[in-house]
Amino acid sequence: MFGIHDFGLFLAAGILLNLTPGPDTVYILGRSIAQGREAGIASALGIGVGSIFHACAAALGLSAILATSALAFGAIKLLGGAYLIFLGIKMVLDRRKHLSLPSNFRRRTTMATFRQGVFTNILNPKVALFFLAFLPQFVDPTSSMKVVAFLALGFAFVTTGTIWCLVLAWFASVFSERLRNNETISQWLNRTAGALFVFLGIRLATTK
Image 1 (cartoon, rainbow, N blue to C red):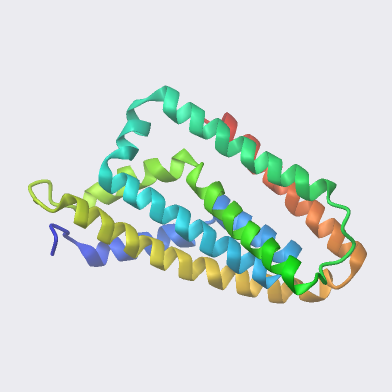
Image 2: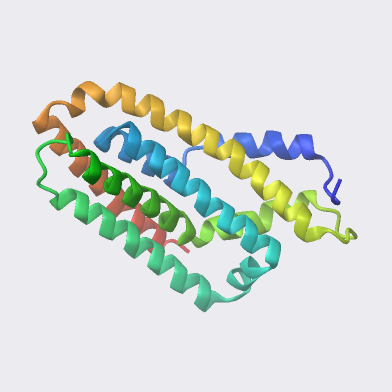
């Protein structure tokens, strides 16, 4: 269908890849533990939207530009790393004592967390290159519907990945709920998560 072959194998491989811990996993766990279930779920959904962007980019051939242009790859890698470092430093310096926020402020915070998840994923060129390298293996090169095939495979991968990310966010927030109710521990959790984001940003910006 649509020039896709070995779809069962693709799903199995995609699920295994989604289960493998990576920067997105650490980002979601950090948000969930430090800020609770809403922040974790918002981060997971944001990363899912970012992954859809990469799937569409791969389908339209935009990812090929990143694969062949060292300048484009380097620029986006530095932007992504800088963004994670900014988020991490912001969390480390945050002096908020508790997370019991007014409902209107909480909604804005959740939406901001969602947007941050989107940008964190979009600005990671390795995700774009992953889609470019992984998806073509399951598309018939002679098919006249390559774009549709790319999109179908990409959305299937994003769906399984988002489900897994939501599970991670749920359990991580439940596990840490009692800890987050303690103001001192909550502050340290926030700082620890921030330091973790700084580490991820530095690693993304410096790895080749």
